[in-house]
Length: 213
Image 1 (cartoon, one colour):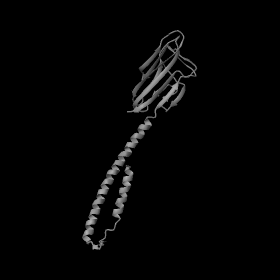
Image 2 (tube, helix red, strand yellow):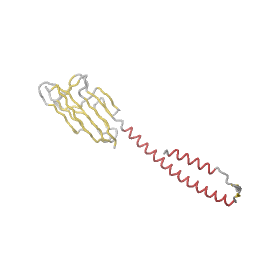
Image 3 (cartoon, one colour):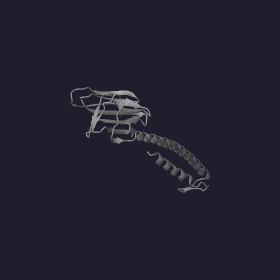
Image 4 (cartoon, helix red, strand yellow):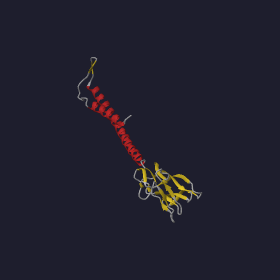
């Protein structure tokens, strides 16, 4: 039951009881005259009841404050859950090969709640939590393709397509990672390899927060 409604009901009861006259006027009930002493006894009982009601009211107010705090925590958690991005290279050609490892930049963005830097291709964790990342890469097998999911400069998982004639190939991989605020995740093209994309958006990079910690 809503604590607010409980508080309103009890306030109403307290007001009704305290609003009753407390003068020493005798009451007549079924022809029996009550003495002023009986009235005093009734007043004492009323005061006891009021005290009990105020005690209950204080308890409900405390519970209401606790509920409000819980709602604020839940609200912050819901807002924290709004972390996601999805993008593709989508350049209509190849990237690489280069003679050094290179961070990939994804030009076409499907969704970005703000933590993915389109200019650098780097995702920066806005909240501490568990995240999921997935990526795919497309290439012609006349040259190899090597892709690495990176976290703060450290390799997490890799895919590698070896030279195998001249056919089109696609590779995918993904991983769940625990991140601290400010941790950076990005895709790296390994040296002397390449990646291809076009309007079909074969080469992608996505990530989202599973839950905050």
